[in-house]
Image 1 (cartoon, rainbow, N blue to C red):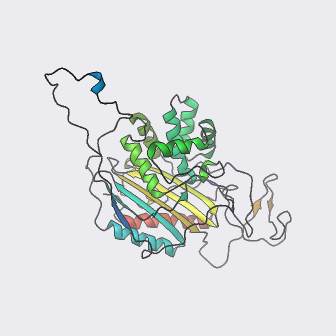
Image 2: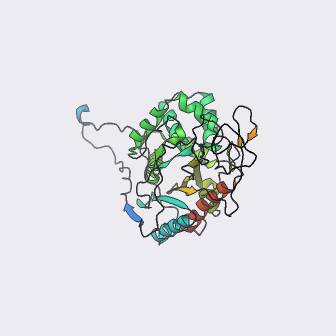
Image 3: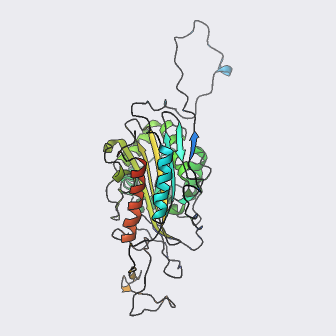
Length: 383
């Protein structure tokens, strides 16, 4: 959920904007991976050992205690026991469903990454292949984590935290990013959680942080079991804000795509979700739907897609760019960015200028995300 500067015919650098959930895009952005079919990118199944259960406490022994030098070191952070299996296990055939979701996304012009973890069994599925993607507003999870880990949060910052996570408010995120370390936020979180593929933004703007679906699953898992260093109260605060995610973001963008819209049978209080979107990166929308799902937070699901801008017909899309200084609607000439012409020219969505809340290509990309999750869980719930 971040803004980007869209290219028309010749990509143009624009001043950094702070509206909605978008990301300015430069021509230096890494080109997205070529669309893959299920045959080129076979789904993989990885097994992560389940967390070690807390040891059983026995009665005190009738012997003198061990000397201090032999006492075990105190843990750096409390580690809750693994999630109890109060929800149903994953349905059979998850790997084949992920492959089908990849094919469906490719047919709509999107490259897809999926990562899914069952915290109760440690079973993990995915086909992200380590492909990195811009986080857009999902980086707000890292901002929240870092500021809470620093401690001594003011009431004003706690209010910004709530707006940033529930309504994906970019203004709140900008203030917290600057006030709590900027790029150091990403380095801190990546080090504490062992996120090897997560890197600070190339331009110092949080929305251009890069990560992978696997790293995002690892962050959620570490948040839930305490490995990242946050205590239970801070982890619960983050998840509480994600469960209170609003249907519309602060900039008016529909943030119910993907997990929320595709799982109508899942009780709302069992879904903690953070969404991300921006346009355009090399002429493509970026959308992410990330969530912890289940009454016991048993499942972690991350879906990320880059989709070619698509208006669904052959008529093209005609738009006007608003001049930043005058807010006057002008149409720039292809050959001369400073001139205007009588005939409009097609422009890609630019979420650093406008939220694209009503943009048809944005709706197409959101539908892709929702359809992917429906293919994964046609039952309308996980487990």
